[in-house]
Image (cartoon, rainbow, N blue to C red; front, top):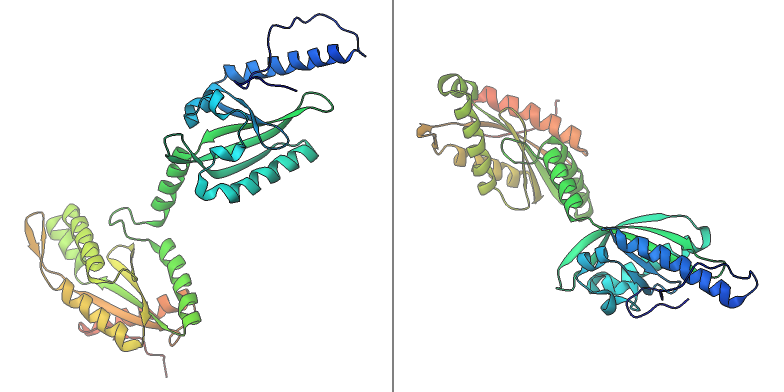
Length: 328
């Protein structure tokens, strides 16, 4: 099967009947069949690329020209991986060749996602690809790839994941993300033979702030506390809000329990500085309980429970951070 330089088969053939055993007639029927198929591909605005058995491009429609910035004359005859970002070319070459082989052997359609392609301008973008085999005759087939820009889909997925893992008011990690990071932190601490601290913080007398100044001021105070906690802690620590006026900090890479106590004391001093909320100076304090991995628990649930228990003891004492102590 031959294609011209633009990726289109020769045109101008008539659909006259021909002898079934005439090789020339069979070739003409095949050309007319390909011609009709390719013309359909050029009508759609979707990006469609067709390849042969060797993964070389033989059809490049107008949708593909728009998506990739190449003209048909520039791209037809090139390897399919020409469209792939050079950084990922070797990996995706193997993946696309495998899909083509499977389609050839099984004649089934397949989908693959997050293939990183490159526009003619050099801009990178992810695509989703649906691949299917089109048998034109017993000996001739095309592999048709429907290619869609996945940038918007992945952005939406990222935004949905972010919203599911972060507190809406403070933008801090929520309980879901905290548990995930605690689990990962425990695994790292175990692997490196280090300790990990869980700091459970509850603001003191937060309800009177809401009652006196209103919920808007209370929300602004929670946002200010969240920012101050982020500014106080290290980048390796996770500061999270699990609801109400409760915050949990995961301290990684600490040598001993005194390191966790020192970090908690630093938090208390930071929160003692007055906040200016909607033009109103507000002071607050916090009660803090601490649990240490692996001394006070070997899983996230146990550590959180013990840090919570220590926090209530600290609230009753109205003073320094309290390190969890196992019952006698």
